[in-house]
Image 1 (spheres, rainbow, N blue to C red):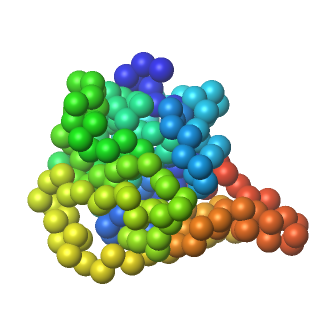
Image 2 (cartoon, rainbow, N blue to C red):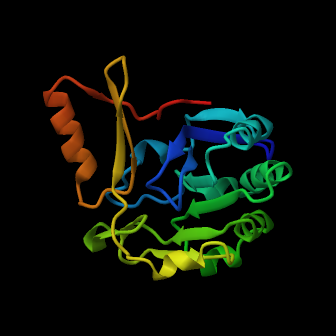
Image 3 (cartoon, rainbow, N blue to C red):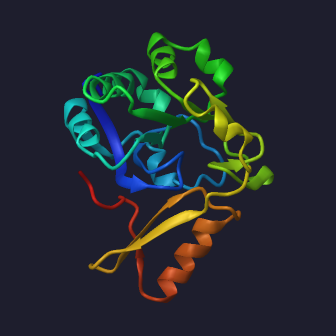
Length: 215
């Protein structure tokens, strides 16, 4: 994958449960970690996904006037850090106030000692959720799945969120006209996805893991 392409697992154009305000979300494809209980296991293999041009994704984000930023999830965004840093630069060329949040299974301190691309992406973020998901420490926390994960303000834009209630933002669900079901967010209860898939299957629904409203 070149710095002008991003391997994307799924996107959502409007989401209110994965960061401040209403945001677009990009789940990248591929993660070197294998956290037990990962809620997005389909994004872990580096094979698969859809190769999307940075310019195409930038046009989509910049043209979405009713969102204040993007949240980068996955997968592991810092495995595609140079391309994601280029994406944020391209969007901010026309929308300088566009905000950025990312998830990473790596600790902030590790990323700070990482590659030039990883440091570049960090420098462009307003918020970071860091650390691996640990099922034994699952909690109903704001934008995070387990108590070891931290919500870090990397700019002054969202420092206020650190003093707001640290409670689950919940999840958002959508039922499509073709009968597929999609959801986004950090489940407040452990084992959510397994239970959800079982309940849906019993009712004849299929969990749509590719997201909805692809740009």
